[in-house]
Image (cartoon, rainbow, N blue to C red; front, side, top):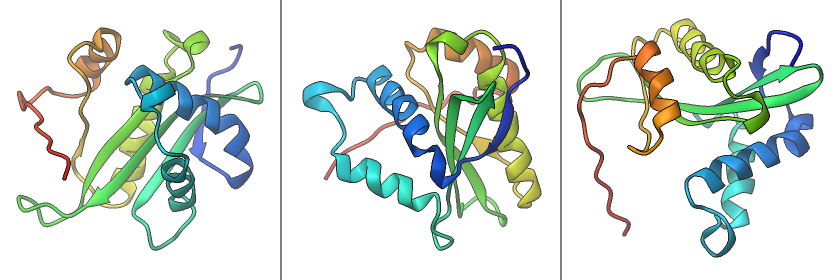
Amino acid sequence: MTTTPLIRPVRQDDQAAWTPLWDGYNAFYGREGATALNPAITAATWQRFFDPAEPVFALVAEADGQLLGLTHYLYHRSTTRLELTCYLQDLFTAPAARGRGVGRALIEGVYAQARAAGIRRVYWQTHTTNAAGRRLYDKVAAHLGFIVYAHDL
């Protein structure tokens, strides 16, 4: 990477370059092979980025004509705020680009988009074993101590 990455909204013509990043993100969290996401989920996720009725958005990091990372985020209502809240759902940097500020730039990109939308809180979650990610997150946000529970129905 010879230039500072450009953080920009994903475009329809990015799909071929976005897909390996998305696959890498999912593999990082154990969603590959027998546990891979149903391709219909990936297709629906991709389409949501371009549907104005959907509050789901994607940014990518680009340098030297290559996509180096992605982030997906969404806006939602909250019972503790009047304005919308931003959930940064996915963040991934290509392994060859790690340690070069791509993840931080993507987070800052989400912050800028949320700020422009009048949103005052961005939050996310990560796995406790994501030590490298957590080192960055501790620099750009506050860990509020919450533990996430989930139950699939």
